[in-house]
Length: 90
Image (cartoon, rainbow, N blue to C red; front, side):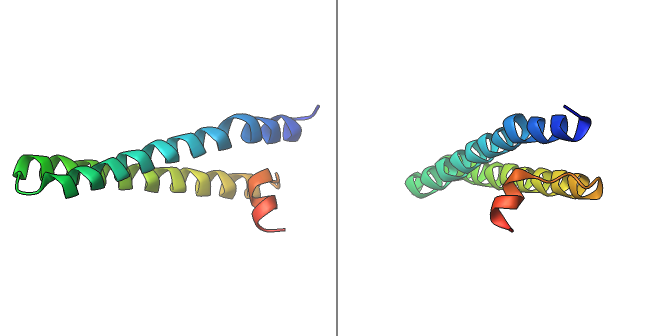
């Protein structure tokens, strides 16, 4: 097992599922914020809390997308294939 296989396996088994999990958490926070915002009605405090959840959910999703992109740039620079992009872009 050489270094490329080790990096490939680490990326496939740990990093990509972790990014997907964190993206899912950020999406859940975003959707919870939308729910709170819409249910807030006349309560300014409830709408403010929902707005903060929406904002931080979006920030979290953007961070996860950026992390995925940076990892793919680094792997591409060193010529290591990423199993996720292999499936998306043959």
